[in-house]
Amino acid sequence: RGVRPSAGVRWRHPPSRCRPDHPPARGGLVKAACPEPRDASSAPVPSVSASLTPLPGKLPLESIQVVLEELRKNGNLEWLDKNKTSFLIMWRRPEEWGKLIYQWVSKNGLTNSVFTLYELVSGDDTADEEFHGLDEAMLLRALQALQQEHKAEIITLDDGRGVKFF
Image (cartoon, rainbow, N blue to C red; front, side, top):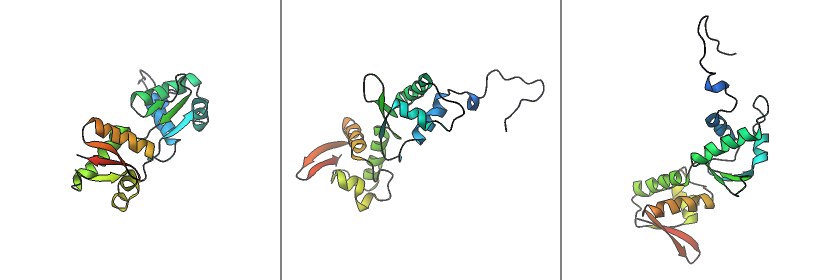
């Protein structure tokens, strides 16, 4: 069912839901085709075309690249090679994950505390938090963002890496 203008009303341009190459809408579809929100995933550009097959018609490679570039501008995508043939897609930017982690640390009075990376994303204390189960690569990016803000320091422990929050 489509919405039709009543007699005498004319569209200046098609509604955004009708535009075949509307980047924000397609960006959501690309993200939806990827794994769980806590995971960052990588894929070659041609495989994205297959992920978008439920869409009417085929999306040309140029349109896919426009969508991916929009995701990159928003911080949800990082190209893995100079030729822009493989990318890492992120449901949340590292800064957003860092903010969630630091809110939990502050809310629980855990500044000046040290955690192993495992405790932070797999421990019982964080089981109800959105960042619980976050993959290690994204966790490190989030902690690096906090480190740049002088809210945390990534440290080396006897049994691996850890983080101290300030």
